[in-house]
Image (cartoon, rainbow, N blue to C red):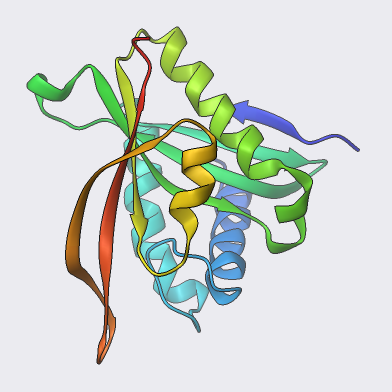
Length: 173
């Protein structure tokens, strides 16, 4: 079955639970989506609820990759909540199920976000990447460029500080 990308689906209790399950799965497989493995659903829920609330309020957007009923990819398109930055958005919690990573789902998810941004007339999209994982190479292949780096800004654990890398996709071109 082909994966369908859906923008702003109704966030039912069941869908929220499936999103949290994906979040846990991605984190525990080594994904950099706000937590460090091992993580449990109980730890993810409070962060997920804040993201869901932004979508439910109509401020933020969510893009889901669905393979039948299975949530296989997700990202949030987050408003900056500041008038001077209203012309661009931040992509957060970009995740693809570990068994879908070799299927091009991440690229398809990001291209869906790009199309959404262009349709909205945005000037750009920004994504923040955890250093030390090589993820910036993935985004660079999609046209994102590094625009900033905060050395050691992310404390993953004792003695494990990582750079926070800001990447930008110019949609005005």
